[in-house]
Image 1: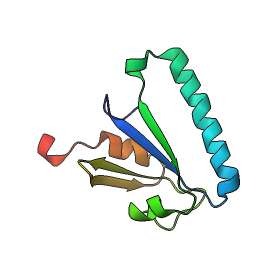
Image 2 (image 1 turned 135 degrees about the horizontal axis):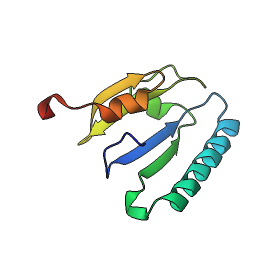
Image 3 (image 1 turned 30 degrees about the vertical axis):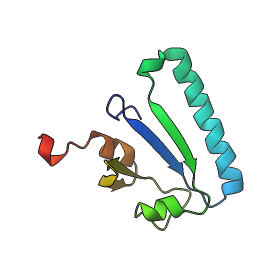
Image 4 (image 1 turned 180 degrees about the vertical axis):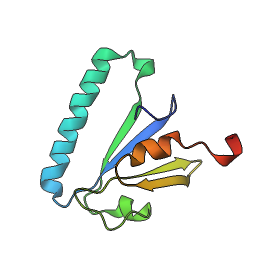
Length: 105
C-alpha cells in the first residue's frame, strides 16, 4: 500500500486453502493496521483499502493467478478496467505499484 501512488484505490484479495480460518485472521490483521493508520495519519493521507476475501479463488483465477495456496503472493495493477502489470512472488505488490507505464517514461 505504501508504494501505491497517492490517491490510488488499493484492493487486497486474500485467498487461502482454509477460508474458515484464514478469512477471520485476515480481517483481524487488516483491522489492526487500519487502526494504527487512523491514529497516525489524517484521513486525506490514508490509503483507500478494500479487502476481498476470495474463498473459492475466482478473483485470483480471473487475474491469471492459479494455482494459489497459503504462501502465494501475487499482484496485478488495474487501470481503466484493464490489467496493466502483474507480478508473482515476494514484493509483487511493490513491483506493480511502482511500475512506470511506457507512455510515462
